Figure: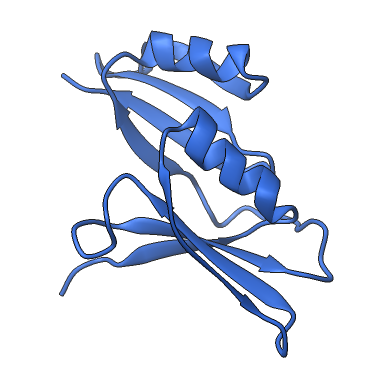
Length: 127
């Protein structure tokens, strides 16, 4: 068994694809419209779906936004330099909600950003 993908619902699919591809450097792996169901699925990731876990962006055509609730925590992405990754996000208009720095009870350097729908992405600096 292996983990295939994590699905998140997004209000503006093109805006979300742009965030994950342009700001986080992922690739758009595939996109498919389902007119009868009035939704579109787009898969983004750093590797092909055969080789790693990816993110499924689900856009329901008649839903512009979602209440995120409190159950979902965050996606985690390993980065070479969390400080530089935050600067890139800010320079391209993204939102950093926790600047890069050591975690509260440890030494691992982390940061948090949000995607256009408010989902949190944790940057974990590679050791």
